[in-house]
Image (cartoon, rainbow, N blue to C red; front, side, top):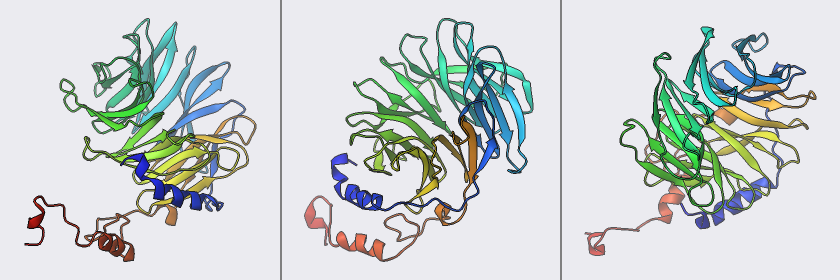
Length: 378
């Protein structure tokens, strides 16, 4: 979809923005209140990880919140120098670690956190911003001077199988991964665009443009065939998404179009979350792709930033206590309703057949795109 075709959608969202959205009645909670700064959380299932500033350097900490009132804490990486930007999938945690003179990618299994393994650490270059799905890790790597996207199969941590995803000029950064699809922000055209590839066969990669309009499209996240990112086409950053089940023909749509900044989106299933300053400070908002409804997750007068989502659990960093701490909420109710199956006749994709579908159908009544046209009504 071309952005110039979004005028009606802009007007709709502008009208919606005139009213203040109230946060739900969820019981948000501090995962761990500390005088140490805690930042950049990630979550998978009931396990949360984050970076924590301890005795002058950053380390990786985490918590199991199966019982939110009594989390079980652990130290994932507490070494000399900095360990930052953690990501988690299942029992595997990965992070970037500064060793001597540069950054490398490391990992550990929750069942044996003392057995840290190296994923990529090449002397004289940096490997940063890891993301993980099942047994595959992706990261950005400047081994060839500019930033490229690399990946590795870590099924056997003692025999990591590394391969290159973007052998291009200029910079490819901020990768995300789902299944065998990687997405990233690409700086090859003078501004940032979103690209993707299926790496099922790493020797025969085809790269696809997801979003390549003017100004910057950056910081992508992916679930299934849905990609989300923040987009500066209209001046300030908004949250956009695209359905990429046909990679050569992505269907792009806006989730927010407001005179404020929306940044750092994440997605899991039908839920998208991001940080938003429409009320003067940073809050966490969500969007339900099944119902097409936006909702406010937390509106504390201090700042809430860098959200992540897994299932109905949302985590973020929060400075309401003076330092940055990790907070979480487990969403429920109508805001997180989901479509259980596709209904024949659901023209607009909102998981119900009603007058809205009839209106779409009648607006196209007796239209025909057959060529030649005389075949339409035979």
